[in-house]
Image 1 (cartoon, rainbow, N blue to C red):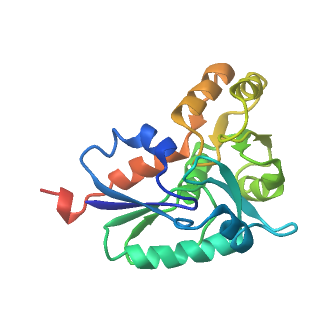
Image 2: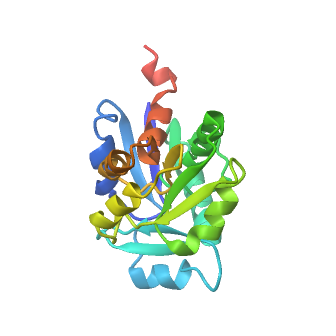
Amino acid sequence: MKLALITIGQTPRTDILKDITDLLKNIDYTEYGALDGLTRKQIEQQYFPRGNEEFYVTRLADGTQIKVSKQYITEKLKKLVREVENKVDIIVIMCTGDFEIKSKKIIIIPSKIMTKITEALSPKRIAVFIPDRNQTKMTLNKWSKITENVDIYSWSPYTDPAETLREYAENISEADLIVMDCIGYTKEHGKTVSRYSNKPVLLPRILAVATALSFITKENSS
């Protein structure tokens, strides 16, 4: 089975790979980045959100954080999917953005899976972590379709201190489920939140890859 891991930022995503390498041990996979080959200045000129435009937060190859316009990065992702779909069996979008992207191959969009799983669990209240507080409205629109009780916590996996994450987790008392709504959140971040909140945590990077590996293709069916 050949797998494409597509990030909205730049490759290599060493921060993600450290959590999923064991899962990919016998898998032929390739990383692709929507912003590969571009300088920060070029990205800010072409993809930076303007005004109140919806945006996502991602990581560049040097480990720094950057914001990208939802509209423009979606168009770039669609183009990248078309470029790689004939080379692989399954495509995984390594971002929890609410994308509408089609492919001739199986395409895993974590946001769709996360919302369906959460809906199936029927929580009365959820806590959702996002990397930027200016994504609050967008996030509420996404998760309030499942429950009207949504608590938002803004904490960047790329720039914010670990002690703040712990403090947030300690104050989560009423949520039935905690959703880490960014692919940048690591397994260690998820463990921290679960440990200090004593709540179950949904971590997208593990979920996305595990979902892809649940499919049997002709290459791995023997």
